[in-house]
Length: 156
Ligand SMILES: [Zn+2]
Image (spheres, rainbow, N blue to C red):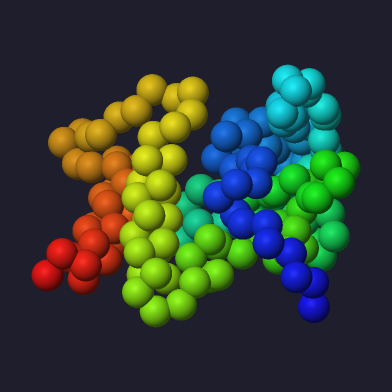
């Protein structure tokens, strides 16, 4: 067991949703670039795959270079040489390092951060589509509700 203290929230990462327009069956390897702390961009290559959705269409995934499992996010490894899934990168969520009420508090922070992260990124955000909440907006609400549920434990 490694005693790595690296946490998901503080690790450079890339989500499949940010490259999904480049994923195709014909060309399953995408080139990614992450900007490091001194502003240099390094290219990384990641394999991708797709699964069929229940209601039609396909959902894109990364394929981890190490374990070959499907992953929605890839994380920069400690040496900054490659991108791996969360398990292979030996990352944990920040809240996993705490116990009791501090753990709940960190979970509330995490949920809040994730809600915020839903709307980060280059795309223009649509809250409604044909009068119904978009998937993105629903995801935001889910995290917001979780954060609220958790924060109620502290304020009551
Ligand atoms: Zn992996």
